[in-house]
Amino acid sequence: AGDGLMCFFNDPVPCPDPTVRAARMAVSMRDGIGKIAETWHNLGYNLGFGVGIAKGFATLGQIGFKGRFHYGAIGSVLNLASRLCDQAQAGQILISQRVCQDIEDIALLEPVGEFTLKGFHKPILAFKLVGLRSTGS
Image (cartoon, rainbow, N blue to C red; front, top):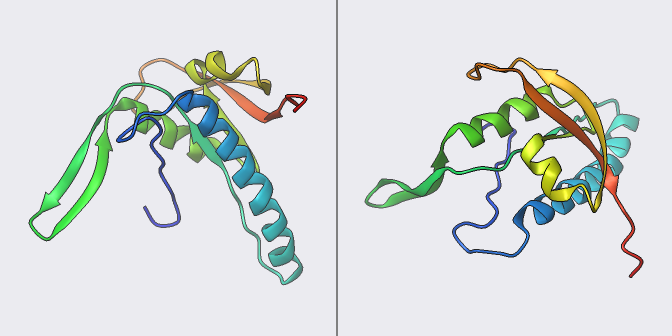
């Protein structure tokens, strides 16, 4: 979707700890983009990088027609991740409460409050993923 990127974890290939993997990738990408953004800023351009991470069930599979297939997904969890991404400021990784529960042992988190998001009847509690805790290895 334009300048956006959507990643699926645990499908189509199952993997252990998909939520932890998503968090690690988001932090790594944010840190890498931060370095690139600084270079571009010195050239007069502003790059922003915001991430939204949600966990849940979705319908996934091939979409398209003979000769042109795409792997896609539909479901409220995708909408939630997209809406969190829309709310994220440059350098922010916003996560849902379900993601927070899965990564709280390895992550540095800050509550950011509730968001009223399009398509959701109740306000959504979100957290900011600040970084990852050192594992000592």
